[in-house]
Image (cartoon, rainbow, N blue to C red; front, side, top):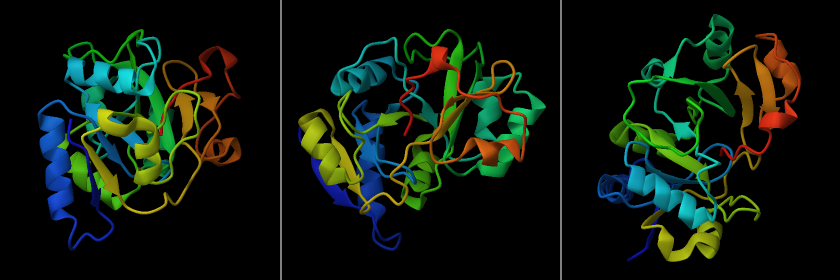
Length: 223
């Protein structure tokens, strides 16, 4: 596979880079994209072969399904069923931003993200290049751009050192501003913190009653 590292630091000139990434996603290939937390490796969420390739590139199995990044808040209702009102309040407060929400997936969705147990982890990133890409591709399955067990990449070049030719297009936007992965909250029942990250528990609790870390769900790999 031919791999391209393309600059997407300037909205005035990133058109060709975004075009190339959109084309790669459309043909079922993988892309690396910047986010506000760390870089992510992405695939068409509705292409099971592409999602399987993403998991293989990271060296992980179906038991760790990738989260899904979306371009806008209203996309949440198309992916999630029965989102509790407090979870919606939390999303409205922190999106776009470093919050990933695990919700019950709409049963009608024709996708295969892995062993999800009927759930999906969703986030809207606060990064202009990521949002520009997502507005054209729709929801992307996106995991942190690193081999399993290795540090998350904060540049596309660092991601390429780990993922190599398994990725068709690397979008380079400079060092990721956050460097800390997103906070994950399980909203399939009482709101429960799964992983502390870019948003603290104290910040979450200013908006909603969130229980502390649930060790049974620890280990999610969202960018």
